[in-house]
Length: 337
Image (cartoon, rainbow, N blue to C red):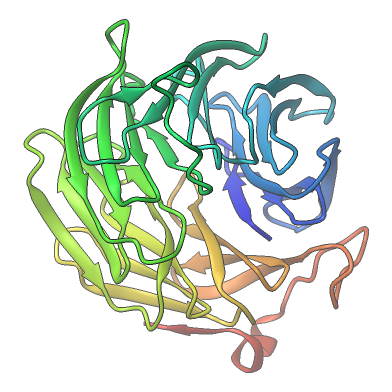
């Protein structure tokens, strides 16, 4: 699976899959509630709206789609990107939806109507500024999508480009204004960026781990290093005191934000971990993996409580996900504290 997200109330989980579907699950029992079909190609990202009424998906078919989270009906299709849509994020106030595409552009939409509010291409040369989406000054396609994250007050947008540029944009003006621009080394993987829940910090993946900056001053706050392979995604917990990371080394890790100390290692996926998401209460972590599964981990005491396999993989049951018993955990998935 490619991505995972909890609903705002923590009772549901949605996953994005290479098979062209997104699914909604009961986050406690693992029972499949909905299958969202409509994309032609892989679904790369998913997100719940802040009120939990809508789900947004991003697809290889160059579209993002908005769905009714209760019944699974399609609400609107967002078209305009020239290549695959890789990222999707609701603003915390629910007024806007951000999408990022491998055509190198970012778009802001009104979620229900599908109206484009803003389209831009983050500058990829190290200069502060924007490229228009079309016209004589348009930049060429970069082939990899930027990542996007809204600030908690919805007035700023953090972007990270495949070239390693991380920017904190002010959205309160008619045109986005760059507040801070940072440079990282990404290696050969897609970028990842996140705001802390209080908006005071911005985190982005690097080729060796995660770098955290103070959003107010732009100064470095913390560097996190410790995976045996590249980090591909990072997310803050709801309290802002921890960061979870997903890595090609087949593990997810949880870190203390202040000290950078490793708190937990969650191991057991058969391939790299592609995405991580904390539950709204911070007590669980969901992981998605290129092995075709997603898992939910209880972080205190640390143990895996759900496994959600994708259709067509071993252990898939159309009516029920695999729920491992505590006795089965040592031989399958391990947690290092």
